[in-house]
Image (cartoon, rainbow over all chains, first blue to last red):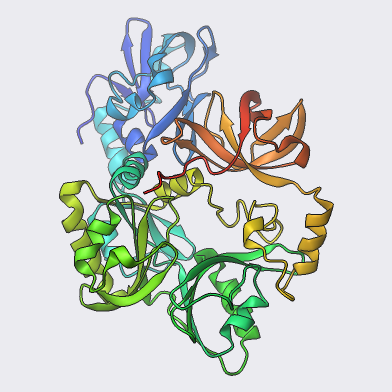
Length: 131
Length: 368
């Protein structure tokens, strides 16, 4: 499947949409399909300082607990509280209503970007992992 | 389709792949954990019907005049009093009263019996039974050659009836019949592991794919779907049914597992009887209880359960329950914290979450 353009992707299957100095973060469609029905999401607290690649929360499916990582460094400025009542939003709208948290990005953005993938590189990653 | 893993395949392996199942190794076989999704499959079984491939479980056939007495000495429940066509849940025990396996025994007629054993315990049970097999009893394993298709859910009878050459409505709960399914010689039992009405079809592997496909086709318009092991685990947990290795084990006895009703102390002797009598008399044992989370993440095996701040138990199984509308589980907990209504906390990722001890089962289907 073609991944949305204009997003940055991590090898842990998160996406980041950077607008100005704020990035919205979620998990990809590939991630939600792999996880299956998502029943619980533990998000970082607003105000938390996070480092690129760090473990910031948890996504739970019926059968398993999966770590949630942040693709960029910064301070958490908003979390998607809708996921408390309806974690299945992540399954239904991984790139839309299922967004997870927003961070005010800090540090060297171009160096952080170099560790992430664009849409076609992420697509290639998925294709490889399916074999 | 080439299977590169070391696991065996059931007769329905290609059917699962064709349906897009996610396969996992389980009990020595590649098994479907889900197709469309665990919650969708769970919903189908509670409201309509679902089909399960249970061919990984071992089917052991015994023939002889002394089978009943022989199995009576190795298990907690009464076997010799079973009538032809009756099925009974039972537990094979060790000398400490712990469980080698929990099984369903089907008496086909006076001298022919079927014992269905958990896939994960098959190697152990095969050796155990073969070592003790008396002369005069013949034993045939159909593990991996026979198939077992389970249909579970309120629509089960109407779905299966057209394919069977007997009156399915006459097959009472926990009985079985030898009959023909889609013209093929089979054993049909009204047993299951979901808490719903349903049937298990024991049939030769070659016939299974055709029967499976016909049942799915016949039920498609009514919302009948294939269901995997993921849904099966949520369903049996809601129905308060033990899963070997979780609520029962070589260390966790049937008494601890809440299966006192299965243990018949008036049998003259059986393996582990003295140990279980001692355990029953002392009545100090930790026991399996239901746990319902008040809030927070799903309960998972291994989470510590605390009462008044003291760690007194651990979660043995857990799942989000669509039927109950909460995260549920079982825990093995000290007697003093085991009464239904007791408030406890569950430690999840270094935080304490409130929960309540509840009596099992969480769900019982409406009487019909």
